[in-house]
Length: 353
Image 1 (cartoon, rainbow, N blue to C red):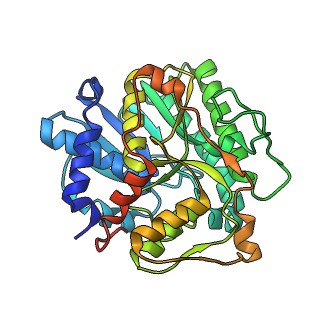
Image 2 (cartoon, rainbow, N blue to C red; image 1 turned 180 degrees about the horizontal axis):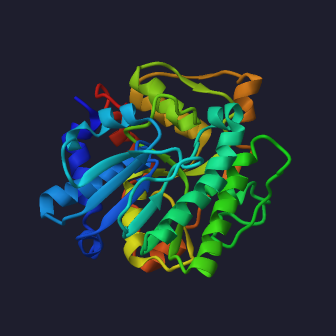
């Protein structure tokens, strides 16, 4: 069984659709989604398609992917449906081949984990900048009603020890003259490009600054610490901690991210950025490792990363998100870190992709 055929997964899709006004924004709309096969993009597609099939909303989804074969495997359930089409395109170089006008563009394509940051630094920067410019131009030329840019907690950089949590106006420290800076600086510039398109092209843009996301469907190559913890737990192996574990971060379960995306399609304010994080989901890396090990019945062991791996690691030691701004609009996360991890590990034994 694949994880997205599990009854728990279907329940999570139903729960995402509980917010009022979601059906109104979905009905008769055309979506373009980049990063379609990723953790967030794939669940977003499933949510829209579930709503489409269950409530006859007449949505159409274009999923933009680089690896068409892998995407066809992941979305085989929708093969032959007129309302879902996969488009093969490298957004850094190719024009997206869609002729008709669209309603919503959700941009999630990005290199999002440490090995890619160190092994493919040029691609990482270009995807967040040139690639983002290309899709913004596409959206502007196709009468897009709202563009969603998936940004990151990484844009805040290191906490300067002057606040407990980052609100949307905070500006921390990033040493731009490092290899690791390519990802957060690229996301910062991506946000600036959104503002430029708002001004010059009158494009409606809303930005999500997403904390560290996790959940079923993590790709095997994902080298983020939490992703590796989960992978080890699923295989009943000891959790490997490659630091003292005193990093203090916010996390968010994937279903909450998808819920926030759809909520902000309806309620977000043009030009604004919104932090997105989980309920009771601020935790140190050491405590995270201990909790996952306890769920898996294994232990935590320490291992020093090699130099190549270490190049891609975040240097931030405390990165907690204040989500008051989106909460004031009416959205709140559903899942705590403990419940989210329990749910993630409940998919043990299913195929993830």
